[in-house]
Image 1 (cartoon, helix red, strand yellow):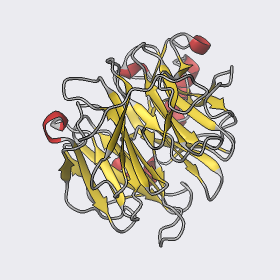
Image 2: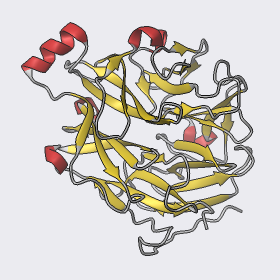
Image 3: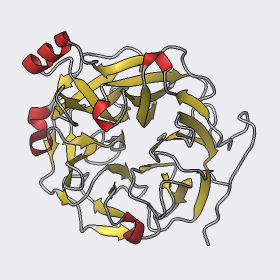
Image 4: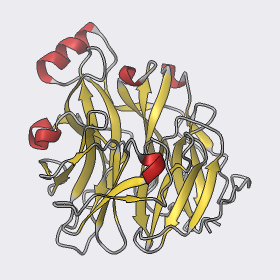
Length: 356
C-alpha cells in the first residue's frame, strides 16, 4: 500500500513542505503569476513563471528569480527572460518581426553540454485569446542575463505555435547515441494533439517527430534510469484512467503505443516528471476529485511501479508544479519542487529524496 506522509519540519531540515514563497501577486508590479518552471544550474536554482494580468489569455512575460542557497532565499529583484507588455510599440514590432511579442508556457532545461539554461516558450501576438503565432527559445548562462529570444517556428514545423510543456524540457544523458539531445513536448490546441520536437545542436535547429498524440494536452518528458524516454500526458479521462504515457527506445524519434498508468491518480491537470539517481519522481494533485493533495511519487524501476508517496499540500490550488532534476547541490539527500500553493502564491519546497 502506498503511504501518504505530511511533514511539517522547520525549513532548515530537508522535508519542510510548507515552502518558501517565490512569486506572489503584485511582486515587481505584476498582477499575478502562474505556470511554474525550475532548473538547477551548476551554481543556482532558476525559478520561472508566467507574468500575467489575470487569466490564461493575459500572460505576457516570463519572470525569473534566482536562489544560490538551495531555495532558502531568492533574489530580491525579478527579471524577465522574454516577452513584452502590451504597448503600441511592442505591437508594431511583434507584427513586423515576431520580436517584442507576448510569451508564455515556459519549458526549461539546463544544457549540461553548453552549461546554459535553455527556455522554450510560445510566442503570442496581442490579439484576443491565446493568440499563439510561433515558438521561441532564449538562453542564459546564469539565469539572470538572457540572450535575445530566437523564433524557431520554422524548424518546429507542424508543432510551431504549440504550447511547450509547461515545466521542463529534457536533455538526454551522456553515454548514448543521442547524448546531449534536447527534447520538448508541446500541445497544439486544448486536447487536440501533442508533439515531441528534438534538437541535436543545442537548440539552433529542431525537428518534430512524425507521430502526433491525438486527444492529449500538457505533457512532460523524462529519460528513465533504463535509458528509454517516457512521455507523460494530461488528457480528459485522467480521473478514470490515470496519466497517458508512451515510451521511446530511440531517443524520442519514435514512440511505442499509448497506454495509461492507472497508478498515477490525477485530475485533469498538468504534472511534472524527472529522473535522476536511479529513480523517477512525479508530482501532481494526487486526487480524482479536484486539484488537491499535491503529492510527489517515486519509482525505482523505471516507472513500472510507484512505491512511495509524499503529500506536499492537502488544500486545493491551481495545481501546477515543477520538479528540480537532480538532488539539490548543497543537500544531496533533498530534492526541490516549485508549485502553485493553496494561498495563490508559487512556492518552493525541499523534500527528502527517500520520500520518508
